[in-house]
Image (cartoon, rainbow, N blue to C red; front, side, top):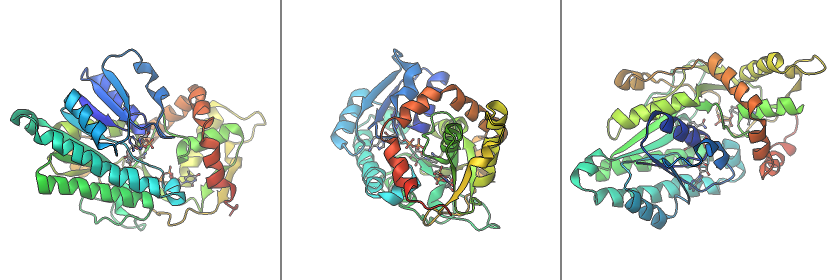
Length: 356
Ligand code: NAD
Ligand code: TYD
């Protein structure tokens, strides 16, 4: 079996669902169920013996060690993290705790388990650390995209905490020969994306008749990748990635935020026209910029393509249409997420953000 951390979050749950669609190898899904973890994402696996969910914190080394001993996974795929830049600005503590201390604790538990494995299982074992392109910092308009050799220059507490975790993972390979793999991926989008992030927030606000808040001038560039393409890349790296290596994962799809929001409005205009005939674009509102906002991310994913033959299957056009359709069909999922602590967060992030 494989041991997945953070498998109730956005990418983790997509990964677990995709994994069990392609394979009968069981998954132990270990997740703390923070505000971002949602077992409803995994409803389709109810009664499926291949999926075992355990609630727990990666900082709890004893619990992790006991589970590893009991279930003997052949690999760990580590998604669990605090993942939202704006939240890291309002409260960095949890990011340090989970992303740095939690990854350290997980590495220690995993290393102890791996050290005790019989030789053959020890050789086959893998620890795959899921990370982000944000560790590389920000690019100017003419800079080449981030490659695996781009120096780390994180600019937010989120990206700094992920960078720290990447360094720890790297060090465990170099120091202990621990069999690690790291992926650094660009911005994902798709089903089960928590509506605090740009794309699902805009889809939800548009339908609710609320403002579509664009930070600053909206010309910040991100490289968007459909989530199932990220999951496929992780499966490839897990299977054939070279130990100790890092692989950049991206969609070759740079877009300015404002253009992304325009596309979303246009799709919604055609799928769910407003009663008054106006475009959703009229809801766009410019608000105060995010402090330290990275201007541009772009990923050079040629290493992954060259070595492991991975390429994204979706274009932005196909992926974003699927995504909007999913949100329109799953309003209950969104309403459920929004009913919890969500409203408090919306107040914290947007209430005192003066209109620019
Ligand atoms: P998410 O916030 O949607 O999910 C994180 C999950 O981790 C949640 O289910 C949460 O309950 C769980 N979790 C948090 N703290 C935990 C802890 N201490 N112990 C156990 N579980 C804990 O995040 P996501 O967007 O799915 O991102 C998953 C991973 O992918 C993260 O490591 C993130 O840095 C990385 N990543 C995300 C993106 C993106 O665009 N979302 C891009 C590249 C890399
Ligand atoms: P986000 O989805 O938070 O991802 P990240 O910050 O990790 O890239 O934001 C994507 C981009 O959209 C980022 O440049 C910030 C911007 N953004 C807005 O303009 N308005 C919003 O309300 C949000 C949440 C994000």
